Amino acid sequence: MKALLAGLMVAIAPGLLLAQDLSANPAQTAATAAAASVAFELHIEAPDEIRTLLANHLELLRYRALTDLSDSELARLLTTAEQETRELVGTLGYFTPSIRFDQAAPRDSATTRKVTLTVVPGEPTLVADVQVQFSGPILAESAAAPQRQQIEDDWSLQAGMRFTQARWDSAKQQALRQLTAQRYPTGQLASTLADIDPVTRLAHLAVTVNSGPAYRLGGLVIEGLKRYDEELVTRLARLTPGAIYDQSEMVNAQQRLTDSGYFDSAFVSLDTAGDPTAAPVRVQLREARLQKLVLGLGASTDGGARLSVEHTHHKVPGIGWRAVSKLMLDRESRTLGSELTSPPDVDNWRWITSAQFQNQALGSFDVNSQTVRVGRGQIGDRIDRNYYLQYERADTATSDPAKPSIAQALSANYAWTLRNFNSAVFPTKGWGLGVQVGGGTTLGSQNDPYGRVMARWIGIAPLGVQADSTQTALRAGRLALRAEAGAVLAKDGVALPSTQLFLAGGDNSVRGYGYRSLGITLPDGQTTAGRYLATGSVEWQRPIISNGLLTDWESTVFIDAGAVADRPADLRAKVGVGVGVRWKSPVGPLQIDLAYGVAVERLRLHVNVGFNF
Image 1 (tube, helix red, strand yellow):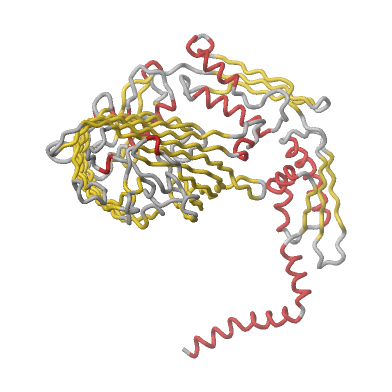
Image 2: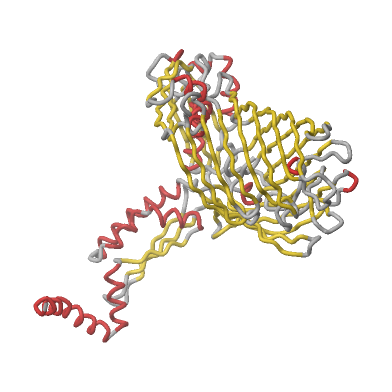
């Protein structure tokens, strides 16, 4: 041990002596360290766009680390850097810039040499004209005329715009993407020309696009199947042999396979080495485990902390259906349910049967309910459809002991949902509409008919206009509009399950009020569900800018309103106003809102994650 300590002291002693020497003259130490760290300092005086480009790409900056760089060598590097600067600035459309390097002589050998680069860009070069031409089969095929026209119309670097290398490259790549996205996956840019006249500062652009042959889909070549048959993959992919190649359809097929739950991964591609009239479609799959158990933890201001346990069996022995059983507990509800779903048929319809037991807070009451449902469903890329028979039994939410405590109903229902958003996870424009209609009869001592209808709509409208490749539209933000309406049609006095009625309030309803706290106010002050519902919301969402750049955060200002009543004439809107922020989290939009409920004169925090419609 003593020998080890002695060795350590010998090792660190020179470092201690050096530290003492350096601490004796801190100014000299700092100067020496600065001189030793870089051979010269470069200061760039130019507009922000040019300064950023040069700071990131100027080759001269790589030589700052050469501490033994001589004055003559630095002078040579500056001469070379002038031409490089001219080329870099030219990529931004400035082909006649004024460039000057100034070098200040160091005061002594310990002072770092200082170099100033001054760039005056001059007038930019503008696009004079653009010629987009086509070659190959795309010229002769009349069905491709809309695609040709779309490529020409969407050409992004138009006459009158400032020419830059980035915009030129982007325009060419966009044209190629539009060509290869449909019909012509092997298309290429046959020739491109940017003729720059530095005297007139005009750019003459020409592009020739060669389509190559048009491709049609052949059969599926499926790899990776062990547990499931090829028919399941064919029905999920929904790629028709003989159809014209469309990249978006390939992507949708891949997404359907991944979302089905049967596969952990799926990759769908066209084999362009085959016959263009029937090109094989390769489907590479990795199957998911036959059974899966998922434990979940979450939280929201609507339901508080949430715990869930979900078990999935993808192929129940004997019937081959998928079984999903789930237990979920939070502050507002306790739910236990199970659902059996058949594989899809040729039209993507599935049989569905489910049973659910639930205890939940509806207004001022805790309601126990049991639901059994049998029907069919079809989930599409944009449209979902469901029709089903449903039996429901629930405690009736009332404080009147004279009324029956149990209500039962049997109904036939149809649900239809259309999604028309530009993104399923982070939509910035588009709209969605969902409608549910149903009718049936109560069960028990009296069998009374009733009908139920509910509709919801969301619209997202950008406020800015995209122009000249800027982010004007994003910076201006967007309006998010939401509306929901529902009605239960039955004669007075009919005892309906309270789960068939309506309540409002909460994160995705009327903010500023508690979850399901807006309903019918009973004589004793308690709240129960009602037969009619109407809610609406207007929200301005605007990106938060940092250092001139868009961030993943947005600010919002909103106003919500909603009402519940047993008669349409009794609907009296409760209003909530507030502000909030949004963050593009990895699992979807994180929504944090602070809302003021005008009727209750209270502030309420609302936190929610994800976008679903």
